[in-house]
View 1 (cartoon, rainbow, N blue to C red):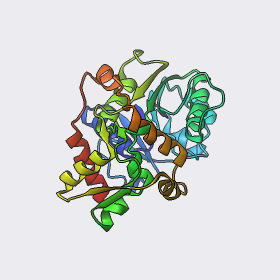
View 2: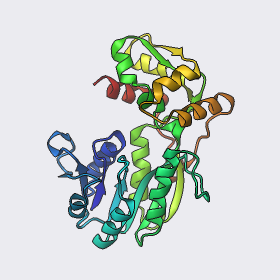
View 3: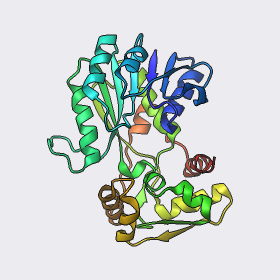
View 4: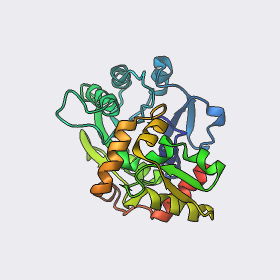
Length: 283
């Protein structure tokens, strides 16, 4: 049995769907099972990463866990102890590419949060795999500038650094990497992998592709960095995002080979990524 946390988030949903389609026993953890809309083959259970009682029940009979820790109050050491007690053999953790190895003091709050969870999991008897999603692969424009809201108001998308090159990853591609780490016995134990998408796309190009997918003449309107900082700061780590975008106007975002190494595929096309993202943003 595999437990998938954050099972209704885009990547978690794809993990559940792919496992269910392959006939793998999967348990999906979500706050609201009635509204989850997950495959009938999956066992959907109510739970919250901040509720130790619900986690203890969810971990019963589980061999492996996909962990996405979205809550700032997540007790990583407590979760690891519960997993160890339940006999879990491996935890695949979606970490952050912002983490710097060998540094006790991390460069920003996002890195510090994920580094602390990594350290707690390393201290457990349960095997681990850390999949460090690059900041520039995480759909950062989408979640930092309310892209769905902007699209609902018109055909102009505002953001900084129009020519910053990112490497957005399709959720189904990331899910395939996660599944490989969850199901390939021993091959990925206690390993750390960077995760990116397979294509470099500027922020301007991403918006153009989304427009093509939506059959709309979308246009990227560049904001000055300080205006962007003011817009981002209430909702997201502005310094991390702006620094990443600025850096990738000068040097291309790296493309990791993890997708090819773990799944044997080159990943979905940029057009597939845009079509999937457009559907999610407008429904």
